[in-house]
Length: 75
Image 1 (cartoon, rainbow, N blue to C red):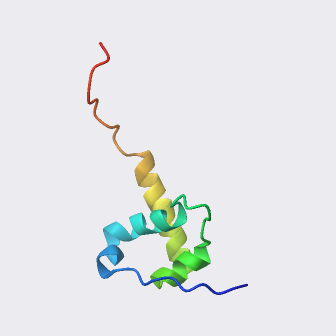
Image 2 (cartoon, helix red, strand yellow):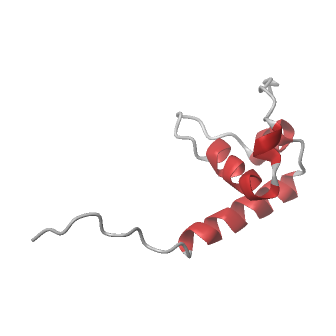
Image 3 (tube, one colour):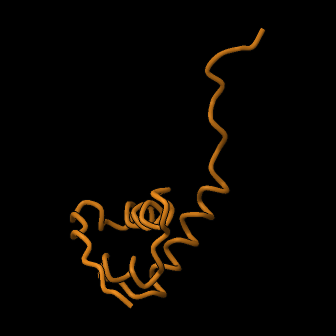
């Protein structure tokens, strides 16, 4: 397996609140390839278990997010 070098993640993206968002961005960026848990963990300096836990928590939070407000009426 080829080893890829990823640019380091900035310190502000390593804060607890944004770390889960960073995991989701890395995993589901929509750039054609989905990095594995191992690749994301290496890039963030975390364990694979931590990446999975953060991803699960972030997805759970998105499921329970309040709906977006209506911006205009269709009347």
